[in-house]
Image (tube, rainbow, N blue to C red; front, side):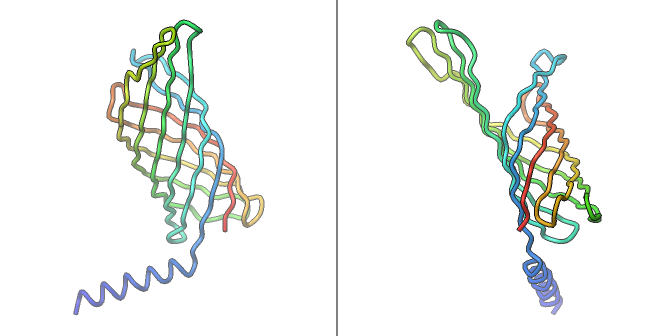
Length: 178
């Protein structure tokens, strides 16, 4: 009997959530500040990103973001090319929505795939391909232009399983809610 009550409660929450379903998509740029292997200096990378969100409850937003970076360094003799793909999933607590703005705070988990390729003269080889798992914390502000169009500013801190394995992200995204 107790299981039926829990099942009924779960179904009620699910149908209420779907009735007020609110999805959003945003695109923008993130400045990533990563700690160098020396543990003292930070490097800065600017990468484009996309984020898709679902408002599960008025206070709970689930979102996923994807970033891809590709950069090349060197000359005609020696060249290093790095490719990186990042995915991060977030659970965010949304503050009360005011007429023009709303705040959020969240925790997340994600994954990084990184590949480094070197070329010496005409010989090319893949040197390193690595997967990293990461955890993150996030603070954000949404500025509403209309009921559907918003600008989001985020600050994120990520910890990942490599040495030194810390990075800061500052992002600006323009989004549409439907």
